[in-house]
Length: 191
Image (tube, rainbow, N blue to C red; front, side):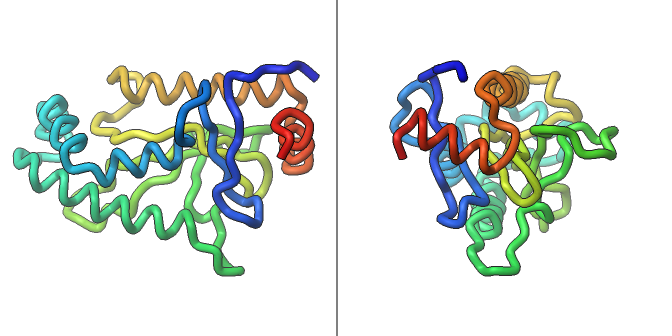
């Protein structure tokens, strides 16, 4: 087993269904950072001003304040769904294959979860994760996706790169299921 210390994994749900990557000694894991940004009106305002052309082109929204408020409401609902601890909560209902053309499961599949987008358009919120096994996910990051593909903008392209980096990291360290993740964390992180 290779040792790398450039990322650790934080348990988000006590039952071990949801985890998040903490990159390079960051203060928060990527799940906390993501929702922190999505609830920050100033950060959102800057983001939508910087990406106003995409907001107009793909979603036909010209009001930055409207986009900010929709994001906060959508993020609140998505966070509640992600953190649902009821016994019948099922993360497999939230996450879908990242590649729309992929119809079968793969080891450590790249997945995405979306907000519910209960407005006049689909949600632009995305949470990206590696599917460790049925019902168990490791969040690698997320983004506000305002374009048709991730490759069109640097902020979504960097999320794609993080997904691949984490997937390769897990493979390099022999993590292919929940037991492997637990063993890795016990051995490497001392949890």
